[in-house]
Image (cartoon, rainbow, N blue to C red; front, side, top):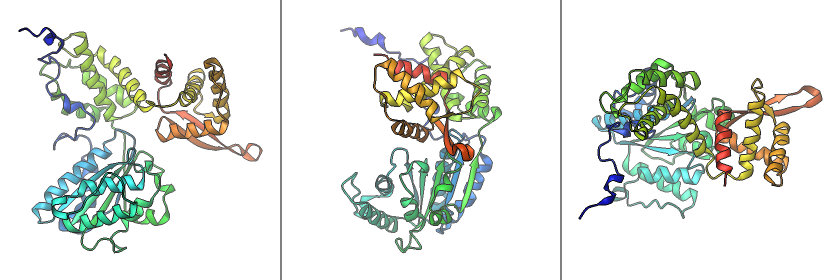
Length: 401
């Protein structure tokens, strides 16, 4: 009996050998983290006391997206657990994506669930149904029952609703919540001014050591992509592909995630075109696709009016490229015109302000407070962080029936 559908699938991939190396969530093996030797050494120094069962420093790591912050924090934590074991110290780490678990309850539940081994502790950590204080009590029980030291990585810590979990974690020892286990907190933020809005008590205990990760330069991006080039089959990449992708990424953002995305998309374009080599021309197409897909993912599920507000800012950005930012009232005027064209009643100015804040929260745009002097008072300007052409393209696609 023949299977007529078998030719739908490619059994032999002519381009990729191990595509997983090009996935964003893939944690590279030792030796594959490129361009962050100094930062790794400094982070290791800060948490080094943990390998002897002593309290590690609490850390705050800043830097733009794709500068290796999360990667290095996870890498250091994994290494620490292994080395501590050699010293007879039981340790572990928990990773929390605060963009997803942005409430105190969600975050503490994730930490407790990650670190808990029910067979040892006889403690249950259900997904929901417990009060925040009960989750904390169970977390303290889990930590004291199992570990000498634990690290908690709070990625995109600025997305948390409030500072409460930072207060609880950074002061657990001195508050007597933990009897024997020492705990260290690693906060990671894309926003360099994040610390300014912290409660003073949290600031003093959390910000013991601060690190800033600069964007990668073209040479570092090139090395990063070379270190992952065995994701492709031998001889598939044209020699100019990685240098071109590195130059594009360095010029625009210095973001390693986007650079790796470009490389992966270039391979996928070669695949779809039926070519057995990845050509330089595919890199430019891949860059456009990477930017478009990333922005499409950011606004997935957004409301029509949320998109109209972004469209208004994109129109202003394209029509007056020399201006760095636009006042809320100016954006609102264009937004009203878009609403008329779409046959929709505009929302209030206050609601549009809220929508702009939501987009700033997602790092789609940046808000800056300005002073207009005694005559005008202060006001807010908004600037797209995304390419306005990409924004317009995706929004037009999204609004098509």
